[in-house]
Length: 324
Image 1 (tube, rainbow, N blue to C red):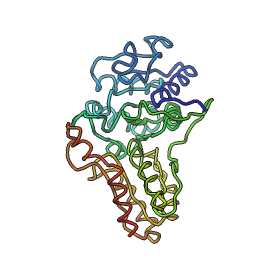
Image 2: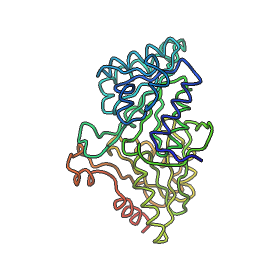
Image 3: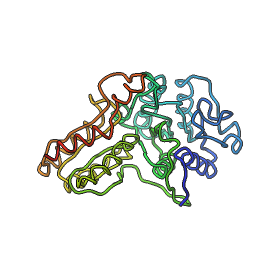
């Protein structure tokens, strides 16, 4: 297998799909001549030219709307938001146009569009640039929402998203762009709605996704040294959700902890907890627990940002409490 960074895996996925289908194009701020704010589109302008790698003005509402219109007439846009925080400017286009057009047109206008970019906290980017929007967009019928953690998952899921005929919200973590991992040689696709067990365990299931796994997996390793066996389930796909995968793990371990980077109130972990108590209640030996970001806007100071987010220490403490 090749070892790629997360950004290289995304680049490879987009490049391969654009080579196969001339209807696919990439559009967003700085995706062309600057080669992407996070260098995800490096080399793509030189390869595909300005008609297919399109630099836009700073107008998310404008270029998101252009993308939806292009999808309506048969093109397959990839719209990059510099960060998902800026998608708020375009939220009307995403929710009231992209998500609903196929339904409202009785299937006359499929919307094969991918909205992608960095989500969650970066590193001292403060309150307006550090938000997790999985639960916001997963709330909307008509949208698919993905949040991969590894380069391999990012590659396989992005290719699947580009080929899908529905609007997809593809949330990457800024912190993960430089992370490395094995990506199989040759093409492979990962289906939406399929979670992945990142670590096998028997005593407790931790359900997580995206950057939060940076805390979960090291915590599980440290707990293993104490003789505590934790299973780590990476959702990867937020909507559609792999309910059976979650339930199968919880029925095996009899305990569930959900760790997410977003806020607690109406966070997506609440939906996961609902599914567990609804369909695996008789298997639970302890209440379902959650670890989330603290219920405050993200602080700018590095020490306060760290306190606000989930951490290995918080996870280890909670697991010990749940196993008493």
